[in-house]
Amino acid sequence: MAGVPDRPGGSGPGGNEPEYEVIGGGMIDDQRRMADTPRAGSDSRTHPGAVFRTAAGAAWQSARNSFTSWWFWLACAAGVALAWGLAAVVVAWADSNGWFERSVPGAVLLIMAAILALAAAVLGTGWGFRHAGGSVLELLLAGAMRGVALAALACSALFAVGFSVGGPIALAGAAVVVIVLEAAVFGLIGAGSRVWFASAAAGVALATVLVTFLCFGNVAVTLLLLPGTTEMDQASVPVNVQRDDSGRVTSYLCVGDLRPVEVAHTERVAWLAASNPALLLGSVGAEFVSTDNDVGWLLAGLQWAADGPSREVPCLGGESSDGQAPAMPVALTGLALQGLVAAVVVIPGRWLASRRLAAGSRSG
Image (cartoon, rainbow, N blue to C red):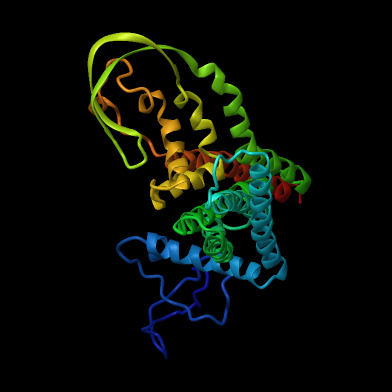
């Protein structure tokens, strides 16, 4: 037996000790060797808790490498400063052109939070691209850890803006959640793009295309498709109408005959824009911000647009509010779509990388 000294008999010092066999290559000789005794149950290293702890440790090592780099903190600070500056410029420009009928105190805060969500997606992609090694769980956790660092700076800036120019401070909480999520998910997209090709330039091109579509292209496509969703439908007369604090209809009953009405079935295309980080921020923000102010009313409107005309045109098809299916939150739809894109990029990319590695080993 390999690794077992030849012993003609069982006498002599240590003769009664159990024999052992060294299993596996790369064993360090000065490590304590254990008898290879079978144990019932699965290997503790494959236990979900152990797997998570191992991945979390590796993710922390990767994130700590970023935290010790001044380039990382410079990128975070630049993203926060850019969001703050752009938000102030956009609001000032819109106000000078008469876009606001009256002052909206939370406009700067809302736009800044939306831009921060976009910045988290872009930065997360870059971080994931630079640190593409490790398991999928390691990449996800490392991206979330970097997102926490960015969210800490962003939250401080949002608090400063909220207290100085006004607006719902609770929106900062929504921004923290979205920034961490976007840094993690887009980090997977960046890492997957890097391993798709042997050339880094090709990976950069793929990541750029994906991030451009998810951050800007999806909204542009949705706006282009919206006019085609308008058509004639049938609706009856609503009675016993109830409204929420913002004045939107929440409950009603339907009576009378159906009559033709023109409606826009926005739900047919709104799902395309749901994966946009800024709209994802708006959907999550609607859960944090009350609807008794302009910002809260606007955020709630995103969900209503995704629900379609049944929210704006009561009794569509003669159906009362009790008969309508529960609304799917925009945030869940958006995260699911982003996760799908990440999976489509990461899984084939890692398979291609393994193929290249195997081909290189054979040729070597």
